[in-house]
Image (cartoon, rainbow, N blue to C red; front, side, top):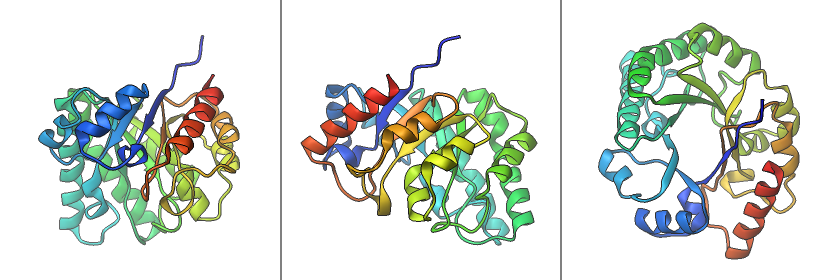
Length: 249
């Protein structure tokens, strides 16, 4: 059976400053999809004409399963459910979500994470939107970092038709981890691989992107080149795209 073809995506900032319409135009010109953080259907519609591979459930930065406050956890479920509905307005196939940020007692972190995702599973299935659960790094959280914990979480949810796994090399680098080793040992299919350098920057010229991509046991559905800090220059972007496209074959 042939390997699936990965969708190559970028975050809008990587393409340069400007409006969503400008990002959409640049993405189309480069034959790229986008991963965006639109908070409403109207914000998402502003990327009209672009392929949107993934919608970030951005409000989960503030409300999520790892909070001690039950109301905050409920707001996290509501934020994830709202992101699913926004994604469905433009047939965006997946929403990127997290267990949460900060510290949490390990047993509570697992149980609350399972509760959070279980609460949105039926809606996601009905809308035809997948939820990809991103594993963060030790700079952002002290909980749900282990590969075994994520494997157990997906097993507990028992809904591979709804839930997938996402990994970000930037989180690994910021935590002092070796992305190649972690990716090769990850026990779940990686639905989205986010390629990022240190401290929110785009991948650096010396980062071994090719080895990171090839370390994945199966081809990710989405490979997204990210920047949270600055746009890439035209030369940097051209080099990044050429390297990733070559590695993906």
